[in-house]
Length: 185
Image (cartoon, rainbow, N blue to C red):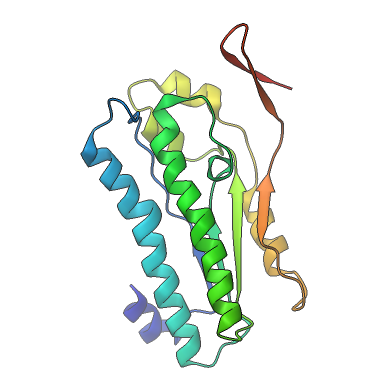
C-alpha cells in the first residue's frame, strides 16, 4: 500500500489509522482466533502503518506531518461488558502506542505530531459486524458522532499545539451495583 502511495502521491504527510475490528470474544470463553484477529488489525496493522508513514515523512524531510490513531473510549476505561474486554485491551494498546510514538518523535527531535482520537460507538458497520447475529443490539448501542470534525480540529491546531488525546464523550455512564446495569446520565 505504501509503495503505491509513494508512486502515485510521492508519500504520506498525514496518516489516519482508522481500521478497527471487534469480535464478541469474552476473556473466559473467547476464541483464540478472534483475539488474534483483533490484535493483528487493531495493534499490529496500526503499528505497521505508523512505521511506514513515519519513514515516508522522514525520507522526504516532512517535519510537520501528523499521525492520528482512531482509538476508542474503551482504550481509556474498561466497561462491564464481557464481550468487549479483549477489544478494550487492543485499544489500551493503541493508547500506549500513541504515547510511545509521541515520545519517540520527541526524542528524534521531530515536529511530526501524534494524536489519539477516542470516540464511543459511531454509526459505521463496526457495531453491526461485532453483533452480526444480534443487529438489534448493534442498533441500540450506536450513537452518532462526526469523527471528521475531530480530525479537522486536530489537523488545524497551530504548529506549537500538540493535541495528545481527543476523547469524544457525548454522555457518561455509571454502573448501578443494585441493578447490575449501565445507566446513561
